[in-house]
Image (tube, rainbow, N blue to C red; front, side, top):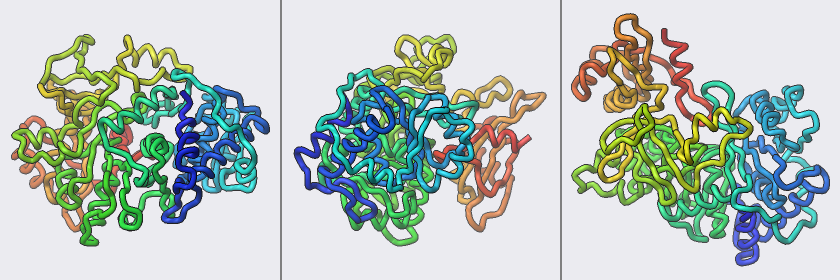
Length: 508
């Protein structure tokens, strides 16, 4: 099943419904959206020799044309390679080369850095600026009435991991994977109606973009902020202007949105659903978000290898304050989504009982086909259909999953495992701490010592003794940091995740 069929159906059933918006301005209705995608598909085949299964890269910032091009690629039966526009041109060029892309769509903001890396690009690869007259002509002609037929296991989206350690790997996601993911949204995250507005304040190349498909299926609006990115005041304004807004946000974005709402004396009117994920949401932060903005939040846990669909913590779980284990559940990432099984395994690969900590594994219809041209990584990561996530966590008796850390981030001090998140959760409840990341630093006696890298709240002063006393009041003494390092900001990748590898280089 070709995902572009959902757009074709929407154009037939609700042709005049608003489809693509920049801010509050309507750029296209559903008939126009589909016609542009079909026309672009024809251009891909006629002018660029793109055949079903060929790869086309998208190295551009958020814009409504991005969605047109994405569906045009699928309409032609080709494979999309969405690349985060914040990457360096050399990084994007490596991805295009690894995937042997035939065409890369770029924009004004990415063209220069991309062209500087031309020597690293596939020799025969063409480029087309998505904000050029050439693209406008490409989407303005005649196209096939129906998308090219595709099977469930045919490749649709080639997603390259963020590559915090070594080269990124190409995650192969099929049409069937993405259909299963989209239907999980309805079962495990939120309802969708034609009156909804999907807001893309985070990169379409990543988690935010993956939720476009279910909103296309229901003929909802797709909104790119006028700024093209995330500005908390702009998001709050759009919520009030558009209504029924659903958006995906990383925890760092949620935190900024909450701060803006507090400053404005608002509660996020018009923002119906904020799905958060992609990094650790600390208990203190989500409690603050709920107190300021109310029951608008749903948490998901997933990876590129099982996109957006390992577990979810539904809105009603956020609201169930009378439950005796409410805070434990709020600190979790919820329960397995509808099409997957989740288990915890030990070092020997055997399943562990509830309450024990080990590696999280997932199996089901959303798990990737495998890594592009990387049999060694496939053998390491996939075992009889089970995806080894590399994340550490535990399941309780009710199936709620609580994350600890990435397996490589666990600190072993004196032969005892210490999970950085426990330390971070403790420190974030101190008013002087705005952000924190705990890492292990080599020690000849203990193996590793816990070091807390702290970003102080505005106006707060560094005070090791106060933070140490606070830690000892909420976690075991052996888990407390042996040292505090104060930074202006934590190093993060283009998706907002803290780069602990960089912190380890900074802190000796």
